[in-house]
Length: 279
Image 1 (cartoon, one colour):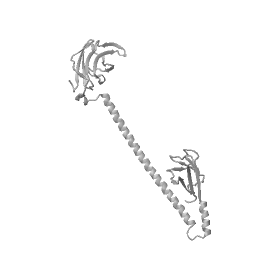
Image 2 (cartoon, one colour):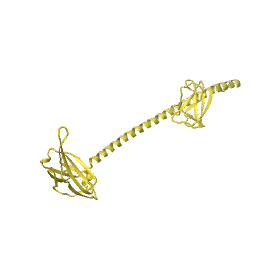
Image 3 (cartoon, helix red, strand yellow):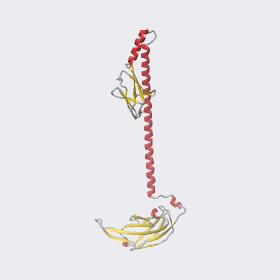
Image 4 (cartoon, one colour):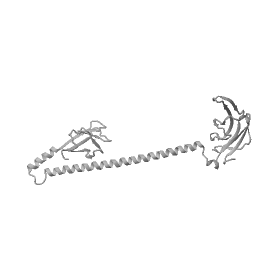
């Protein structure tokens, strides 16, 4: 026994295989049971394939080593048959010699009710590789999730900044408009002056409404000849003030706006109030 492994021995003379010892094999062992093969000189220089068969399951192991672990796939309750085949190739890759055992050696495998303690600490290479791959995938997923969270936080921070900027701009516009009202219709004005000033105010205020005639409408026309360098344009939906570059953007034609990441349905109304020459 070496390294905690249970070692069986098979002696092969010419093409006859026989068991040197016959130990009890328990099913479901992994990396635990090996067979040591002893060949006579007639097998020298042959490339060996060890075949393990149990019921409908058969596994071939191609190796030049003489000590071979029994594959866990065939370590199930039943009868295990073991055969060996040897080949020799010429320099150009053609097979020039084939030798095989004329008889298999058999081992009875009894069903295990409990896993042996020695087996619990070793894992088959393919299982270990699967665990490694799952761990790598989990690591990649965690990094991608972190990057997405950071990106979402940055988007939210940017949206908050844009909303605050739009709100500040709207406040400045309202202050400018109120200042003009105070100047045009201020205290001490005569009736005629007030009336004239009121006419000036009315000439400076333009309003329009857009009524959607279909669902999923995003392009909204106001036709007010908006000059972004001189005028202030306020946009409302259901009485709520919308913010430029947050809820909508002005188009270069200056007579329409496009809604950002949302739309209105058939019959919905967008209203506009334009204050001329307030900047």
